[in-house]
Image 1: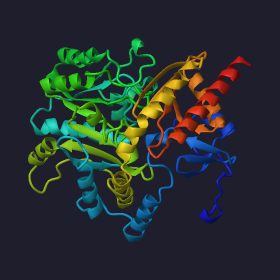
Image 2: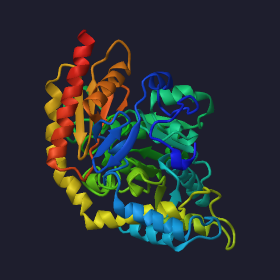
Image 3: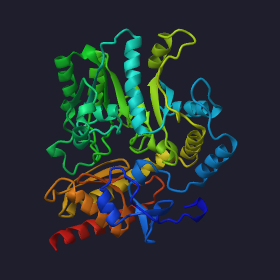
Image 4: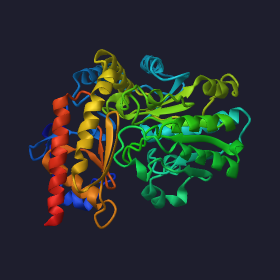
Length: 448
């Protein structure tokens, strides 16, 4: 089918193997999105839905932003591609400088990748390269966290803590990876914001250091708030303790801010919100407002300097990169996003809207099928009560809510809610109202 004659509904669904999808179920009753503008989506049935999860956390500035469209179009007309190896173009340097003005501490060096997964994979390699440059090749171990999600490359799955991902690919995962416990405790049910208890869970890292030797560990990687698993908010003091233990043993602390970065917590980054500065930080998603794939790894100056100083002049210092690292079209989108952040005062807008969203989110706790709610800033998770087997309640509730006109992502039995920052209070009200309708309809369907 030519591009001129393409329609919003394809002639065949058979050839596309869809990601993280029940393909057989989907193709029997497809859910196709045909248009998007602002906070709204349109389905192939012509129905309007409100986007309650910013796509996959990646469209906080709303859909169809003219500024981004124009920037990308202009870039494609001028320079569509430039090799990123041993040459470059000015835009990527400009973007790195702009990002460095927002990142905390001395995280001033930016390595561009093509998504969140490749950003994490790159962070792992940079951690190894740093220790080798400092003469500590024995530091090969990594520490991740249960229920953590860092992407789907092999390194990402290895340090991640999503059970199904690990089970599926256990035979090819990285060696030498340990996991600390997740931070969600039974007493944290229906707690909004940071729980008062649980900071002691950070001591798991100290235990691993004692068992395996802190001198053998390269880095510990966590999300400031575990997002994909359903908004697991860190207990007060928890991240500070992780920082202290890492410093004690010379371990690099990596924050995966692919979800929490660029305003989701109410601050620019989770690092800012919780007052803990990592050594390495990953970004993606909102970096381009989800329009063009891009990942970013921000490194402390001393990490960059160590890797540079360990190599002779004229040699490649880090044998790593991607064909699409910092390509012009992605950079153009990201630069436009940086302008919008400033022009529309986006971070303060998110911070000011967050309390209203959290109040609405927790108003759903009276629904009988809701087992728990967690929230922080502009993100929340609604756990549904188990329905015969794990994952069934979340999927069935997702479909009921889809029909009720609210679009979001479900992970297992958790509904992931992360509104766009351009929302007004009326949009939050609409999201909460349609969630109530969809969850209520799900409950009715289970009784019939």
